Amino acid sequence: MSRDPEDLRHEERIVWTEDVDGFDYVRESVTTEAGTRTRPVAWHGSGRRVGYSVLRSDAPSSSSTGKFTRRIFWVKEHDRSERPDGVYKTTMPSEGVDPRTVAPGVWGEVTERAWGSQLPVPSGAPAPPVQTEAKASRTPRPDRPRASRPGAPSSKETRAVEQGVTKAFADWLYLHEVSVPESLGAAVGEEFKRWLWANSEELIAAIADAVARQTKLPEERPSAQEQ
Image (tube, rainbow, N blue to C red):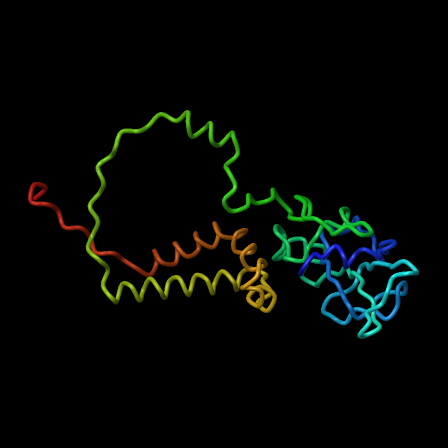
């Protein structure tokens, strides 16, 4: 969703139809089809509306449609406010904002409360100073001899690995409360990437466990000296 300041220029106040203290985040959207400046904005999407913006009396309508541009705040049935231990226990949907940061003419912002944990460091951002100092103070370890690796896996072993990954991912999705249309439908956006980022460690562990159960790499033959 674009965040054009012009869309909010004529806002006068924000009306919350539910207590915002019950929401770590709400979804923020803009409609260009509002029929009035002040009356409640109709919501025809999934979930329910929890707030909307009210425009000043001199706010202009669209010259082509006669409609007004207004904001709507809403939640879905699987958002954290509805299911605290659900898919958004940490992280949040791409349109989520902290309702405490919303004001007339001001876009909502993402906060740690809205995110549900410490905000992720943007890609390419420098590491925190503490981490940098910690790395600099480490004593370099002597090089260790690398263990020899077995030859390239056979096609049968490769298929077994692929099957293990597929089964682990399917089992993990089955055991976790995930809205497939919500997550996979937004795979090209930020929502699916955030979801994977938040659950990557558990998902990798599940995949590794499944692969270990279904595959058995060939044992390395002892060298002539060991014989």
